[in-house]
Structures are given as structure tokens and as C-alpha cells.
Length: 463
Image (cartoon, rainbow, N blue to C red; front, side, top):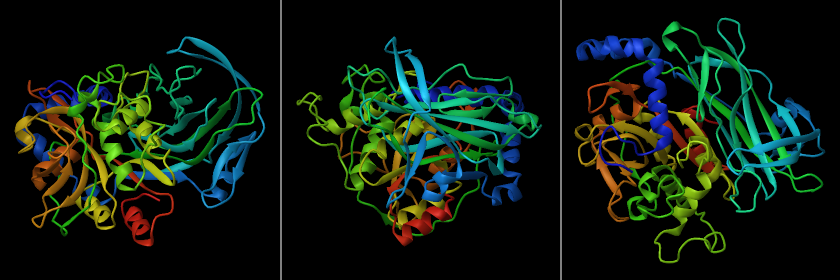
């Protein structure tokens, strides 16, 4: 992680910053002329803010997997229903752009039913949970309908495999240079190019392709596939929430900073590993961790080798970073009976609801050093783990941008923290208007949540 604005903590977040800044340039230019006008504009849509500006849809049940259109796939019943490759629909040749290898793959496809967004969206982020044994991988695509009646092309939202073997024929990757003049894919995010025009995505389908080495019987299995669509209003400030009770979860503490210089082939080393470090904290909170065999590749002199493992296995070879949001969620779900989802939340009340049910959260935010008391740094994109709230309602966070593991637990002022997390516009150190993440959050939770956990997840729009 770098320490000063406008440098970046996380390459993926840096690119999202450029995306939002470009998409909202007209609005931003107007707002930049007057901080007072910007604040007033942000505070205006009270009625709109009352409704959750986020739509989550996921396919997870046996009836879900039977509801789509499959070619060569089979719905798998059981305690954790899924979809697998039953018989190949054909063979596909794929040249991996990172390995420079061309290989043939047997494949099958499944296309979801059309989902009509309850919130016509400016952004959509897909998530998936899958098992991909060696010699297998999956591709997730999205095709949507605009509010003007037009359709998007089929966009690749990710090509993913859990493994990272040196002799593999595939690397997990996002796909650049996807656009139709109305929308674009930025690493892992579908985005309307000009949100101020009023154009929105009103519905979408997801297409899942399951691939394996020809002639083998091994196959990937997908347990969860879905997407989060959102239309968060542009705003420099957000309404303050009222504290809702104190609680703190016992979550392992890991510093990304102690890994500085380690394995620079993965996003330059530990200074940029805020996302996988946060992911590893919550994975271990749920009682899961890599085996000794999994960690055998890590230099035995390095502390917390599981953090190095997480960085390697969340790494996106296209943008050369470990901060791809869905890749982190998918990594978490490679551990026994865990699910991972990328969503947006709307206030600290949402986080309090989750924490009270025993569910910590990973949040994405950007800020100047002076905007977050006690942080000691500024960042254009950083992930933290929210583990609780004090009696005064302040945020208790495991901040991986700390000099040591014991120093990771931090307490941040509620009002400061809520605003830097939920806003969509901000001023950087040079005075330019750039983006905020608008409440982006990763949630990892058991495949079979308790009744209390299910209720809390439903309250924040996740099922």
C-alpha cells in the first residue's frame, strides 16, 4: 500500500477511480466549482436515499440451476446445490494472453433466466462461488438491456480458476477493451459510460461456461452465481446514521505492511495486498485456512504465509493486481462451506446489523490523510475489515495498512468513516474531483447460515 494521495493502494481501485471520474466529468466539473453546491446536491435526494439503490440476484438453489438454459450442464442436488459439466457441448480453442499458450477445452454452458433489476443500474458487478479442480476453469458473461431498448454485447466479467500451477494452460483474468459506446467493462465492473444521460441497465442475463481438459472426467462445479446492480446517487457527503449498539467480533489481525517486498510478481508485493489480507482475516474468522501443503511454496522465513497465499490466489493477471473484487469473493468460497458476495451497503446501520449477527465485512474506501483521524495515510483505494462498533458508535476496523499485526485493530470516528466509505465523489490532494466507491463491500458467510445470519443478510439485500 502506498501512503500518500494520489498514489494508489490497490491497482483495481485505482482504475475504478479513473472510471468514475471519467463517467461523471460533467457533473463533477459543476460540483467542483462550489463545495457548498456539491454538498447541497448530495443531500437533496432524501426520498431516493430512503429506497435501497442496490439490487442483488443470485442463483444458488436446485430449482435455480434447473431454471436456466443449459447445454451440456447438469444441476447437482444436495446440501449445497450446484451446476456442473455433464457432457461437453463442444470444444473451444483458447489462447491464454498471459501464458501465450493455445489449448483446446471441452465446454458446456448455462444461461440464466432474464433478471429485471428492481433498481435500473449504472453499475453491475458479478460474483461467483465455484470449485475448479486442476485442468478446469469457468467464464462468466453478462448481457443486458438498456432503458432505451438497446442491448449490450455479451461482456466477459471474468475468466476464473482457483489454481495457479506453473504448468497450467490458463490464468485467471479480467478482460480489457470491452465497450459498445454506451457502457464499458472496467476490470470487474459493468458501467454506463454517461450516467448523467439517464441511460440505465434495466435487465440482464448471466452466461456461465464450464471448461475442462478434453478427454478427462474432472469438471468444475458452481454453487453460486449472481450480480449486484446499483444506482447510487452522486454525492460528496452522505446522511449520518444513528449509532445502533456496540459489539465487536474476534477477527484475526494481519498486516499487509509486513509483507512489503515479498513476491513482487503479485501486485508489487505486500504493500498492495489490502484486499487479500482482509479476505484472509475473515476466512480465518470462520475457522478456515490453507493447509501446510497449500503453503509449501511460501518462503518459510515469512510470517503469515497464508497472506502470501491469498495474494497469489486472488491475483488478476490482466490488471496485475490482487484487488479484483469478485476474484477475492471467489477465493473465499474455495474454503469449505463458505460463500462470498460483492455488494453495496447503504449505511453503517447495515454494517451494525451484520456485525450483531456475527458477520464481519470488508469495505472499500478512499480518502485524504486528514479525512480519517488516526489512519496516518491517504489513499485512492483501500480495503479494511469492519469487526465492530464502540459504545459511541465509532467503527472498529482491522486495517491491514498497519505496521504490525498487533497494530491492525483501529477505532475510527463514525462520521468520518461513514462518509469516506459511502460517498461517490471526493476531492483528491491536487483538488481534482475523483470517485469514491459508494459503499462497496465483500461479505463472506457460511454456506448454511444460522437463522439470525440469514435474517441479517436479507436485511441488507443479500440472500
